[in-house]
Length: 316
Ligand SMILES: NC(=O)c1ccc[n+]([C@@H]2O[C@H](COP(=O)([O-])OP(=O)(O)OC[C@H]3O[C@@H](n4cnc5c(N)ncnc54)[C@H](OP(=O)(O)O)[C@@H]3O)[C@@H](O)[C@H]2O)c1
Image (cartoon, rainbow, N blue to C red; front, side, top):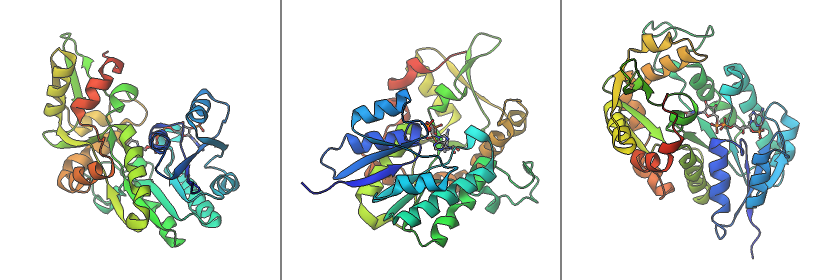
C-alpha cells in the first residue's frame, strides 16, 4: 500500500482540528494519515484521538521549534489560532507567524490557514459606526486572523485561506442559546436585525478542510469560504421552536445593547454581529454553501444539527 500522506493538525483536541482529524481517520482508504498536535499528549482528548488512530505529538503554537518538529515529514498542515484562550490579536498574529515559519522549514506542501476577514478593510478605524477596540481593531478576533494571511504568502507557501464562520455549537458552549425571559418564555437574543447569520456545525469545518486537502493543490493560493446555512434570527428561532417543541422567540437587540452585556468579549462580539449585519451580502456571499457541500457531502443544515444536539443546549 502507498505511504499515507500525513496532515499535521493544530488544535486537534478542539473543534476545528478535531473535526479534521476525525474526517481523516474515518476515511481509511483516503490515503491520508492524521498527526494530532496538542500541548498535552496525556490528556483524555489526546488519548481519545490516539485510540482513533491518530499520531499524537506535542506542540505549542507559542513555540516555533515545537511546531517545526511536529510538522516535519508531513504533507499538509492545518493552522488555527486560539483567540478565546488569551483574547490577544497580537498573539494570534505571532502564532500564525510561528506556524507559517515552521511550515516553510518543514517543507509542507499544502497549508490550510483558518482565517476570517480583517474587518478594518470594510470598517476603517475612522468609521464610528462601531467602537475601535484594543486601540487598533474593530473585531479583534477577526482582524488579526485576516492580517496574518500575508505571513503565509510572504513565505511562498502553498496555502488555502479557509474562511470559517459562526459555529452553531456556540448555542451549547458559548452561552448564546435561547434563554428564559422574565415571562418564562424562551428567547434567542442576537443583534442581527432581519439579516442572515452565516452558521455552520463546527465539526463540518474540519470535514470541509479534509475535502480541500483531498483535492490536492487545486485550492492552493485560493480563498474558500464555507457555511452550513445562512439564516435570519427569526428562521433560527423557528427551527429551535420546532426542534425543542416549545416556543422560542427571536429577540433582536441592537449591537450597541449587545456590546454592553458586560461578559468578556461582549464588545468584540457586538462589533462582529454588526459587521455581519452591515455587510451581510458580502459575508454570506463569501461563504458558498454549494462549495462547502461539494467538499463535505455530509454538511449539516441547522435543522439536522439541532436534531443531533438539542439535548446539549442549556436552556437557562
Ligand atoms: N466559536 C466560533 O463561532 C468561531 C467561528 C469561527 C472561528 N472561530 C475561531 O476558532 C478559533 C479556535 O478554534 P477551535 O474552536 O477549533 O478551538 P477550541 O475548540 O477552543 O480548541 C482549541 C484547542 O487548541 C489547543 N490549544 C490551545 N492553545 C494552544 C497552544 N498555545 N498551542 C497549541 N494548541 C493549543 C487546545 O488543545 P490542547 O489543550 O490539547 O493543547 C484546544 O483543545 C478561535 O481563534 C476562534 O476565533 C470561532
